[in-house]
Length: 316
Length: 316
Image (cartoon, rainbow over all chains, first blue to last red; front, side, top):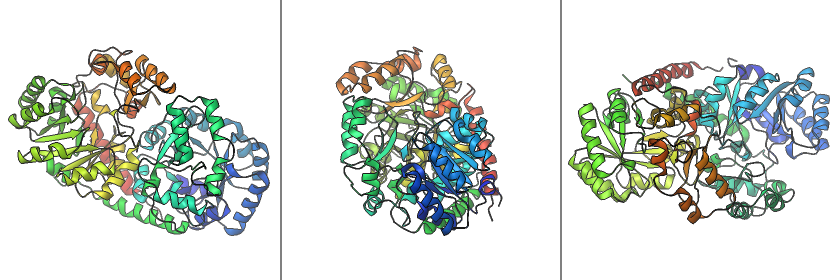
């Protein structure tokens, strides 16, 4: 192990599978961890009792480290954090909230804490709060996203220049080439969402996986900017949002349009038109549903090949 | 010379200075070419007679190759192309239009043609039309931009996988690290705009250069999406556009808001509030006004250092 992130997490490859609502339960997380990356259970779409089951099943399915991602804006955060400590989860990724709120509690319980940020302000806050590492997530990432709209190419070197703790790059990374680019930008590891959302072990509905691998350029857009910006795949619901926004819809109208449980409806239950389909821009490059291990191995192999290619570039 | 782009242009470094309205006249273009990159005169903000003077002065100021960038949507394109052939310009970058329209004419006159694109469709069109290379420009780039909003991280590997001609990456590249990332993504060279807009030789107004190096994260946004998307620096004008757009302003309202000659007013004449200030996201990383040669040398030096660092990354 020769990297701050592989050492911090005790994993083989500096590849983290993003915690994703309705995609990353124990099956995906354990598959990625067993393959040598860091799998993450996404608590964002789970009731506390369901999360506990996923953690327990994940422990049965792998001896390797795995993490839980907790969006801090969720109402049951307190209960979720208690379950995490009771179940002795060793790594927690916090997102969508103030990094200071839970870091001390988690650290006191011997848990490694990583916070997801999209700007320098929160990167510095996370570092100051004692977080062990940061995920710097760019505009191209799927799901909820920063207001600055800073892309991975601009965000990662900026964050790396400003914090001392390790930086995990996220957003637009679904191949070995993109992984190498992220490491070139200064990242210590990558967090990969979309490419694992279409893994066989992902709990996403098969129709959603099919839509992802069929997506083309420009098929995802950042919507709901007057609420919380979220990158959505084009469908009837996203078109309705786009149209409302083009006509100047305010937050109230958007809340009404969104209604309840649309992410579940689309991503888990398979309603491809009325559901909310969260996925990254890199979906335009994804072409296959495969086992997570195969996805990870291909990314790693391409990373090594491309590293040799770039090492060999010479200009005199 | 050991790269398709350095060979194509007969330059030392695979670094192209972007043609930029109100920034890149003969002074900047010749400075970059003299430093070993490819300087570009931006015809977009010049009357034909003015362009001719810039080409003539550039030829006097450098023996090295330089190019002219021609936005194909401009009314005087015919006249501009005649001047370019009369003045024996050897390289032309075309943008903002159909690559097929002028490529054959330019090629017949022995001119190397590069077309700027933001999606695969136009990349393939450019290749089919006989263009010698492509600039793939991501969402984070300043000025006019693609409707797909595809970022450099996602766009470059996608384009490299689809065309055989060399690809020059643009958008978010202002440092050696970002240049290395672009090469990791498969690019043969980089096109750098914002970092050269603040060069001493840039014809941008000093107040505009100062605003660029003072810009922070989130200070540029893609606006005017109902007309032609353009990345603008925050000021009173951009705020007025943002407010109008949030209220659902249509193209007609935006045209009226834009009025005439706002880019000149801001970027060249120095009205920092009512002018249209086109610049990239990477402005948040720029901190100094310096000679173009110093900027280029620093990028190149960092590129080589970072290439060594990345080559040395090892995981067992």
